[in-house]
Length: 324
Image (cartoon, rainbow, N blue to C red; front, side, top):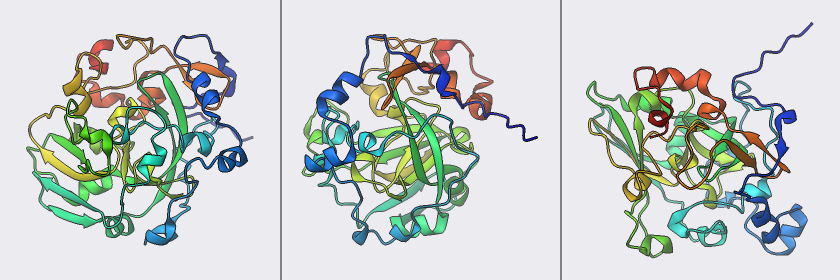
C-alpha cells in the first residue's frame, strides 16, 4: 500500500471556503473579462507566449518538473496570471501586460558584484545554460491578500550564490531591476525610489526555496511577469519577488528596500507571510485564490515553514518580528 506524506505547504481543495472577506479580487477579474482563452484572444488581450524566436534559450522549455516542489492546489489558469500583474515600473494598476511588451529583454546582462570571490557580468542566456533549468510549482501570496499557483522554470538561487562565492563578511544579497523611464513609464513617477531594489540575507539566499525564474507555463518567462529573470520567494509576500533583475550584489550592510523606503510600517524587510499580523489596512488571515470561487486560510510562511522556519530561530519569534 502506498502511503503518501504531504509536504507542509500542501492544502487540499476541501479547505477552500466561501469568500466573505472584504478584499475581493474576483469582481475585478470578472469586470476585466477574464475567462476562456478564446475570449481573451478575441479581445486581443496580452501575448500568450514569449517571443521565442528572439530567445536563444527557448529550447530549454518546457523543463522537467521537480516533484519535490509541488502543491495540491490547482495551478492558476495562465490567462489570469498573464494578464493580472503587479509591475510598478509600468504602472500601479493590474493591467500592465500591454505596456510591458515594450521592454527589450535581449541583449540582457546580470551583474554579480560586491563581496564575492567571483564577480562577473553574465549574459542572460549564458547564465541560464550554465545553471540549467527545472520546473517548480510554487504558491505565490501577495500582500494584498490574494494568491496564485505558478509552474515556474529556472534554477535555485543557491546555485548562483555558490558560483559567486560570498566572502565571509557578506551578510545580505541585494537585487536591482532595470532603470529605463523611456520604456517603463512608471519610472517617471519621481515619488518612487527607483530603481526597484529588494534584498534578503545570505542565509536566506542559500536556502533551497529561493528560485531564479526564467520561464513559466512551459515557455520562456513573459515580460509582464518579470522577464528575462525574476526571483520567486514563496514564503514571503510577493513584493519581495523582484522582477527583471540586472544586478545581484553581496554586502555586509542591510539595505533599505523599495517598499520599505516608501512605507516601512506596511512593507517590512522580512515580509514573511504571517496570518497573525494584519496589514494596517486589511486582514491577512485568509487569501483569495485567483481563479477559484473561495478563500483559504493563510498559513505562516505560506505553508513553507518546514523549509524556512529555522532561518529565523535566533530572531524574536513574535508574529510582528516575522513580518517586519
